[in-house]
Length: 608
Image (cartoon, rainbow, N blue to C red; front, side):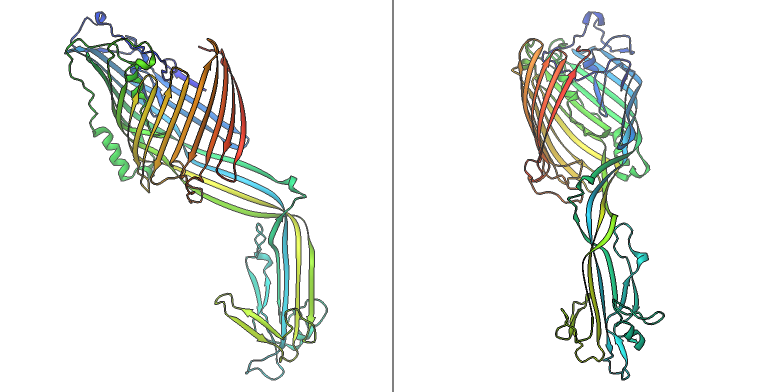
């Protein structure tokens, strides 16, 4: 939904011809003093009074601008994105003085826009698995070997240890605690020792000593189930919390033209109502500087002749071609654009004069802190079954797999010391040992949650551009003053030839990359073939590569291993009907490469 108040919504003027605006000298009667113009008294050529405020293009005289849209879906929380701008006051004065044409445009604007505050993306993956488990049982009892032990006394040579059933994690099925019922080397009663000789694994008599280790682990690992892979699924849910940002801005634009050149100076000063925790010392200084810093001076010296009032469109396009940081709020912006008048009227776009713009920008940009959590749980869907089982009990007269020499090796898990206990001389030695291996059908559920918290931090930038009738070269550098200062430098170049070629190239380099600000290169090349007056065919190729964008765990991929892609595109247009096709090759330099095909159909109801 797009609502525009006070005028028509405008787009960047991309016409090739140099459609300069004229200033009516006779109607002005050559007044030496500028005359104040109230909105509505006199039309202003829209391009000459156009400016960009926090990403919104506005024309002089427009009452306001409102853009609103609702994002909704089955797997996301509804959110309202909006930007509203209201012109509190707009004044314009213009005239000729000292062989200079001068126009001064001043406006006060109130802007309210939405911005992300928290964004939570929850991904749930469910897989059919076969849980592996085990039961380990061991007891060793016999005559005590301690010197202080009484003759004929009996001891246990394993601790009394079992899994605490009340402390098993219900999600992972992993024990969180154990029950210790007796100590290694503890003296036991004869009744307990004799009770262990009953068939099956025994631990003593009721009310007496409890000996031996009885460890039951229902989850020691898993294997993916191929037979039940049809039950696998994945889902994603996005929850967005937004905030409103209020900005009061003063926009001043001064247009000057002499007999040989023209300039356009623009200065924006704003006050932004930030959240309480965003008012750092640097933010206070930047906000105060926005109203104290002087404006860049675009004044021209008077020429030898009357001012030339055929001013190239490139001057105004260049002023709006300044690269402004995305997702940012302007506190201070000042820049000057200059162009030299053509000696003769331009007949094609390539003959129009070149305009240059340089400017300084101070403001607040969004950065985000990202935290990632993963939770794994297992939901049994079938009974637990034994797939292998072994149990043996008896004394030294029994054939033991691991006790053939009458010893047991004990490894201390703390100091890694190895101790061998020789039981060959222990009287009345009795050993129980058993191992069961189990399996159980289950669903493995992995819930990954990515939480992004957004905040505005101070940002300083310098940018400039060279704008001609067929190309735009932009260059920029800046520094983002977050917890870790990030400096960057970049440039981009766009070309549109009269023969139908279009090209775009961009490169950015960041000193301290994060998820949203990272080094990247991008390029596009296309050719439009004109078939008739209202029919054309386009072929093109595009590529991009992320050089150092960090992964969610904070690690930075090596050069050449970041996300990348190549697009092959084609399009056909016949009047209001357009057909497009795109073949995308993603992550072409990794093992996770993929391809996708997209077709598009567009019909313009109002081709004008």
